[in-house]
Length: 278
Ligand code: RET
Image (cartoon, rainbow, N blue to C red; front, side, top):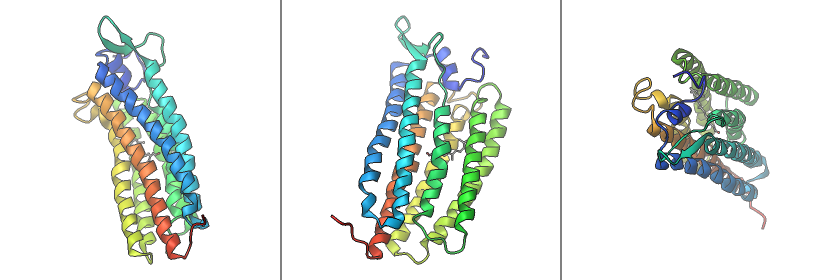
C-alpha cells in the first residue's frame, strides 16, 4: 500500500475502491458550499460593521480577514478534489487520475494558520478582561494556535504510512489545543463580568459553540482511524464524513462565531448609548 507515499487516505480509497457518483459529488458539493458560505458571510460582516460602536469594529474587520482567506483556500481545496479524481466509464466510478495532482487536506491547515489566531484575537476586541493581561493572552493565543496547526499539518502526512508519527504529532498538537481551551474559558469567564445579562447569555452560547466546533477538527483528523486503525471509516464513508465535518466545523467556528460576537458587540454598543447613523 505504499505506492502513494505520504498521501492522505482519500487517495488510497481513490486508487483502490474508487468513489461512487454519490460519494464523489457529496464531497464536491460540500466543498463548494464551504466557500460559497464564506463569500456570503463576507458581505454580512462588511454590511453590519456600522451596527457596532467604533471600538468593537476590529472584530468585524477580523471576520472579514477570516472570510477572504477561507474563501480562497477552500476554493483551492475544492478544485484540488475535482482535479485529483477522474470518472472511469468502464467501472462507473471515480478513481485517482494517472499523473494528476493528489488530494491533500493541507490547504485547510494553511487556512487555519491564518484564521485560528484571528478568531482567537477577535473575542479580545469585544470582551473586557478584568484580571488577565491583554498582550499576554494575545501572545499565548498566537503561539499555541500556530503550534497546534503546524504540528497537526505535519502529522496529517503520516495518516496512512506511519501511524505512530501521526499519533505523536497529533498528541503534541492536542497539548497546544488544551492550552487554547484553557485560555478561552478564562477570557469568556472574565468577559461575562459586569455586562448585561443578555450579552452574558450570548457569550455563554459562544463558549458552547466554540467547544463543539473546535473539537470537530481533531475528530476529522482521526476520521480514517476512528473505528479502528484502517477500520470502519477507512473507506468512502470516511472520506465524505471528513469533508462534511470540516465544512460544518468551518461554518460554526468562523461564521456563526463571528455573527454571535457581532451580536454581543451590538448589545454592548446599545448599552453604551451608541446609535447607528442612517
Ligand atoms: C489538529 C491535529 C490533531 C489534533 C488537534 C488538531 C486541532 C485542530 C483545531 C483546528 C481549528 C481550526 C479552526 C479553523 C477555523 O478557521 C490540528 C486537527 C487538536 C482545533 C477553528
